Amino acid sequence: MAKIQLNGKRIKIRLNLSIKDLLKKYKLHEEKIAIELNGTILPKQQYRKRKIKNNDKIEIVQFIGGG
Image 1 (cartoon, rainbow, N blue to C red):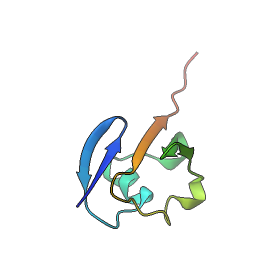
Image 2 (cartoon, one colour):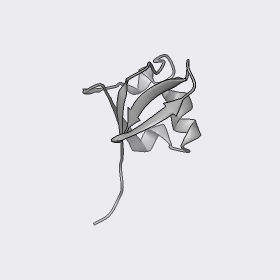
Image 3 (tube, one colour):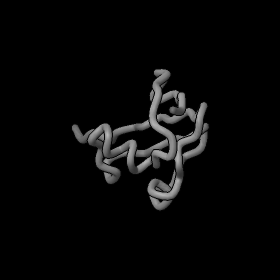
Image 4 (tube, rainbow, N blue to C red):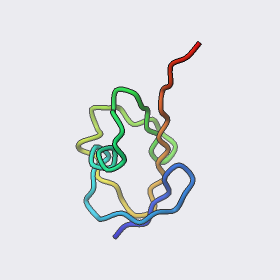
């Protein structure tokens, strides 16, 4: 298990989970979000490749339409 911070909350997840796997787990669509990983915006092309590591800090921002 890895301990990470996700949107300000400490959680435990299984090791070798990719960012894309994390999005699936929380039923988030990658077209409608942006991810900050350890203070840096993560390009969408890296969601599948980037494995989550112990003590990573992840912020997921969802785009919401309105007017």
